[in-house]
Image 1 (cartoon, rainbow, N blue to C red):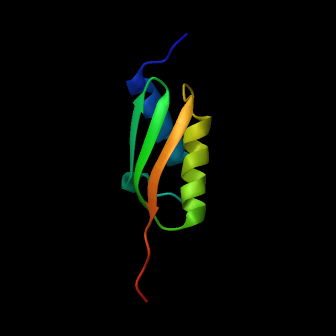
Image 2: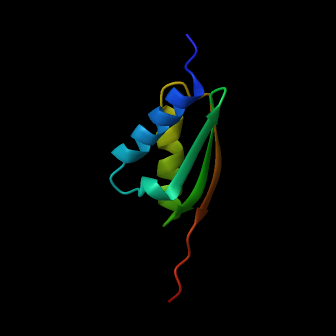
Image 3: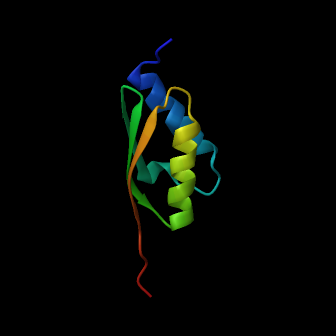
Length: 75
């Protein structure tokens, strides 16, 4: 059974929300045909990896395209 794009997008958003260390509001999610595009910013490379993994395990996801950027903080 194929899952529609809106449901896949919501599944990914739900998985991102379940990750305590991620600010999912800074991550945009778009899905088409099971291919999920992540864009926006995260704080660390570990957050980027966690977001990618969370998206990949969401129901209906075939592939994740990771366009997330790691936000560098000025010191």
